[in-house]
Image (cartoon, rainbow over all chains, first blue to last red; front, side, top):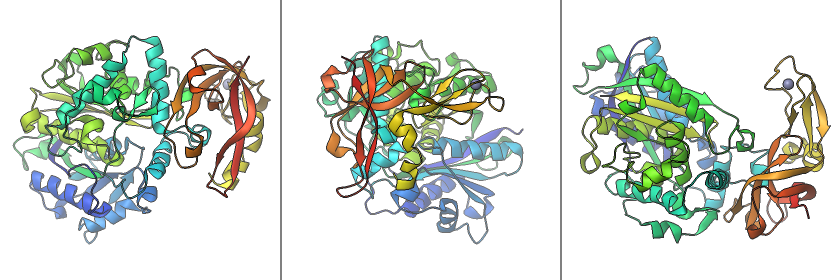
Length: 386
Length: 130
Ligand SMILES: [Zn+2]
């Protein structure tokens, strides 16, 4: 196995891109990543694209080929593979690229993620996102995606001392960070009251507990570490790439408010990297809902179950805190184009480790990315080091 | 949901019929044709559940997909059947009545409709036990 490094990253602005098509979003992110790496397209060996549901959002399948074509790689016949694991599609595409390079099969590989979600109405997108869970035995009963996370929140708040205000503080912090991120969908600051006065979506979760519907794309370039200096003076090393599965349905989990796949992927990542929690300087976690960030911090082992709400309230996870979480603004404020989110997390960590995160810069040499598919049926964890 | 996909599981949806692995005794609902514990050595048979259980967790859905929008708000819960397995279901009660630990039993009800003139899907919901 070879060591792998990231040599370039690119990301579109996240938001509602009424005037930009699915393929144009991708091409923009890919071009930014290649430019950052000082590459032109012709030296690419392969492309891995994370995308959850183009078939339903824009009625287009065969995404790998489409993207290779519009990225100008078809005439060179660059192999291009679509990777899907619901909201973890991006993290999984990155992992496939890392595996391809580590194995020695491919040298210069792009991992990307893209989603165009705003071409359909809200009811339709609620229905599509529910397909990340069990369509036949959760969706059929009327479970929405926020509804499933709401049931996690109900269980969690019944068992642990998490207040409604602490939960709201997750969104407040992530908007604070998003306000400092030029690609974020929401760059406005909010208060606990903003969250508590927003409309109920699925009790106890309110509109401002939920990540938005977003268009966006992100791309990164990975190469063998031994070649990284050919392209850049500041390569970022991939120290661990781990993945874990769990039951597709929430009702079949061992514990409703612990994502066992987060626990397993986190442990595997720490073991691979030979690191402990003290070595991690920043986290990008999958806060599709505020309760998901609380669970992620605990399930990855950064504190005991039941403590993440208090730590959030005390500012431990804020930009200036001991362990900054979601410096990008997270899914909540940066936005959540589902297939692109996992790549955006890598983009954010690379920016932070290179010292290029401007107004939201934290002091970090090692960062961890945590990307969840569905309610935790797939979890992908990466550790990157400067 | 497509008509064939719905009809395929009609006995299970209407009558709460799941499966049991006779090798280890574990019950499954939704039905499974492979026991995750015994895998190839497990023998799977149908099992009709008695329909009583307890609410493990719940929410009140206020914003739903188009199929369910006319039903909002509704109580959605994970119910643990007395035989052990858990399932996701609606509980026909007022939002403020829903509680963790509440005893419920299954009833046959209309679940959703595909549009104004589309297929009406029936299935199992739960109601509070008096
Ligand atoms: Zn068995």
